[in-house]
Image (cartoon, rainbow, N blue to C red; front, side, top):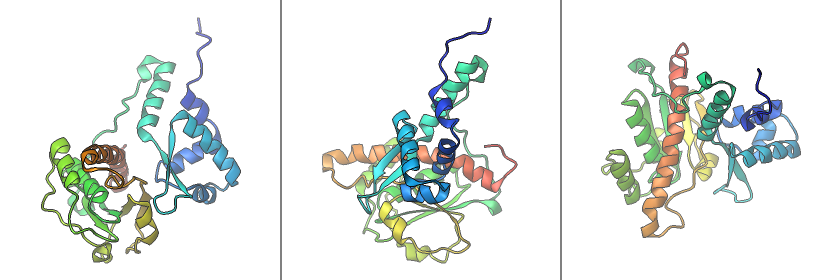
Length: 260
């Protein structure tokens, strides 16, 4: 007997709409503002906003006020939430379709074909060096990675050093912030901005790298010394999650025959 009365999983209902699926695929690549989504998707702002509201209500999409212009918000696709939603949808259809929601580690690539990634933020003292260290750590040197800032600070934030050492076993104590201009002549395949401010002033790089934006608040802003470790721990965890979902993209870009 065919079972009846089972509700359609929420992810399936939401993703089945063509415009919402288009928004999901665009936001899977980068964080965007509404006006950018209007241009990319080609639909009126009121319609985009309506469907974004539905996606936010499901938890698939989140929004954060821009640190560059507080009147704007950046929309972000929570890939971790999507992974679990897809797992639940597969399981609801058949137990054998239960998927592993955790992305697999990046497959090794040839040294000559290593992807080149630059992480950019304002001070190069917190978010971008954390991202650089985590990506290098997770790929074991198979990705050429650097970080820099538009207005670099004198030194790496002590909480960033502490959180990477205590939670990830990575030592960046001898690392020093550097200016984006020092890397302007370098070639990169991906330039990932982690700061809304630096996204507006990031210099042009050779060979037109793929530009990605991760709108992540500065963990050093608005917190006391006692709160800084928790703020940096949360930021590092978010950056690490985004990096885990970036790894299959990097592998596929270098080895298209590898299934991510």
